Length: 114
Image 1 (tube, rainbow, N blue to C red):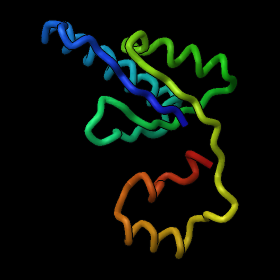
Image 2: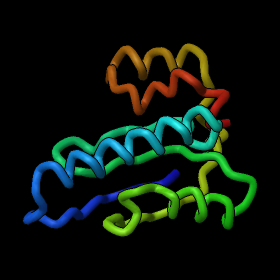
Image 3: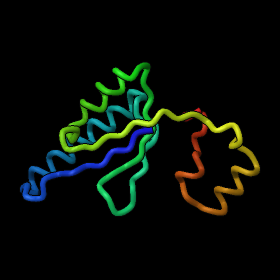
Image 4: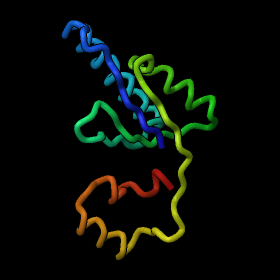
């Protein structure tokens, strides 16, 4: 899992920000199509996200993250994750999803992160 917090300069012209945002979106979509970016969750009220990436090595993940157009303005934290042994899809999992109704708790695509 990767946490990304973006710190863009506040004095940039709107057109420069729009160009950078468009380039970032295009690269993100390319990462999704390549199977590198599996899930992304926005952190409410911030220009930040938690995301699940797949790479064959730390070097590959590093290269992919460095290829993002906003990388020079990012604080990136990487956490290796795995399925917890006490949390399995099923009735308990479905009850949690109904109770909290938060997509980040539901993990609809469980196999992608397993």
